[in-house]
Image 1 (cartoon, chains in turn blue, cyan):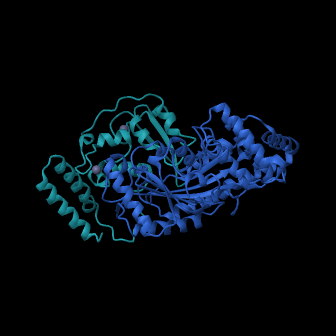
Image 2: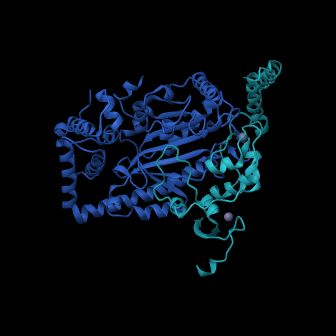
Image 3: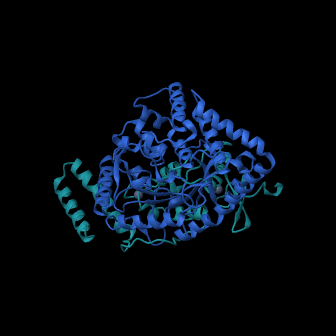
Length: 354
Length: 174
Ligand SMILES: [Zn+2]
Ligand SMILES: [Zn+2]
């Protein structure tokens, strides 16, 4: 598998399967780990970073893990951005320097970043509300790597991390939710405040500051020390169903009180996406969100949820340029985006790109 | 809030200019901090994989003005392993090596309690028996020594340090 082959597939987490997948896009857990005998990435020399990278790569091999390693340091900026769009690496890793990379597992369920803020950032992602399954997988993966690596760990403080906000379990448990009805009815602020009070963070997908593109929000834990992994996961599995319920109630209210208006909004969004000849990324996300809501409410019945999920990723700048095979300016991208959308949505059927 | 005016920061002797109410385990808890400690209390978690938190209260509070913080004696402490000073940590928010959790322990514990509400790990333990942090980080120091010795063309020292590294590595069965 190389990067170009990645453009021809999409992550399993976009398939729209799994429990509550009309609202829960994906469940994801990441673990922060560091090798005991090296300074943290930000204090490591180039040579040390390279030693860290090769220790980790050899551990992956010895553990017989089915992973493909991308040497991010050697990748051109466009390819780095492409990996960021696919949620396989962070912006920090893309913008970093020196030896670093990411190991990607089958179906893109696994992504292990090397020499990010911590030596290892292990991530496992699955479609739908599947935190227990994700935990089981990542816990096993962590064990397999740990057989070949000595992690920095103290009995009192747990896994030692570069930033004290991650020390202890080093775990971030996150659920990505599609909340268009709560956003439309201006109830998100209320949800944010309620979640903040119980020490959970809310972030937007690709969001800059307060902008949450496509009405996707990730809810995750902030505390990492003093509670066990299952306890932290339980906070999420207790709270997320409540947020899902709010969203369902808001959707039902829209259907009962503003059905005509909603149907009109959804159909127009679908119409524009199918016919536009130039379209910005922002407008695309906005319209895709409406169409996604429309599918889930039965207002659109000739389009698969997986197609819409994929389009959130595949209308991003780097993806468009990768399939085009050349760098494009903003205007050219808007034209390429519209053309790609027309081809994927033509005749209202699910069309596989070839 | 009038009575709060003369209140001192809970963490230092500066006047408390930020009064924060957190809901902790269902009960409101009031904090009174100077700007620096309010910042510390509300500091968001790492940027990591995600975009910044949407309702970032900390940011709103900090935008008021970045008053220069007075240096403390702890700021000058330096880690013998990775050479980071506590001040550098304060400025960057990133530690330099695992040993920093020991060397800056007195300063870090209140910070950890602020961030996590707890100071003792509960959860997964690596299958390998964890060696103590001091022993773990000896290797980092030896590697630094080796680099310095090689740079200074002091090959006698370099050879000795290299042997020490090897024997520790062997002891660890690697
Ligand atoms: Zn203070
Ligand atoms: Zn250090």
